[in-house]
Amino acid sequence: MREICVIGGSRYFGKQLVVRLLESGVRVTVINRGSHAVPDGATHLIADRNDEVALNTVLGDREFDAIIDQICYTPQQAAIAKRVFAGRTGRYVMTSTMEVYDPATSRAIRHTRPGEPLTEDAVDPAGWPVDLD
Image 1 (cartoon, rainbow, N blue to C red):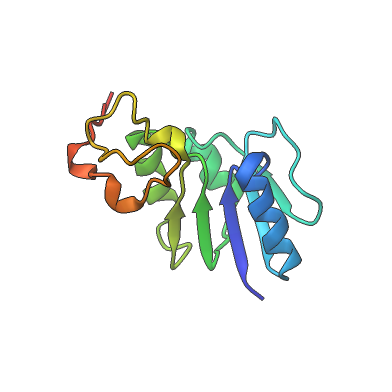
Image 2 (cartoon, helix red, strand yellow; image 1 turned 90 degrees about the horizontal axis):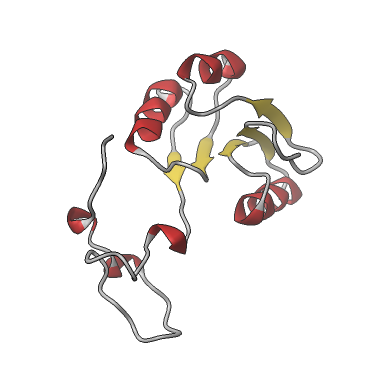
């Protein structure tokens, strides 16, 4: 049986993802800060993703077929995740929502007509400003 770890996973898209994974027979572990319950049937680990020691501690020796990260917002969080999950998984997937690609403030997005979906090729990551602080 596959084992998937979802970081976030207690609200919005993440919650629906966890429910669907569980319904398909996948074992699911959700990591979050504990401020929201996770769907029934998922293993719940509580840690702040910004606390590398706590994240390593709560994970123990767990390994996963895949990790789906719903809440990676900063370069620091990505660096922590890279260190913590190295050797624990064969696949790490970071997802995001449209709020990441804010057409009102970004010059890195090739705009589409209103109502048209924004595709991945509409975003130029090289033109995206990253605040490392």
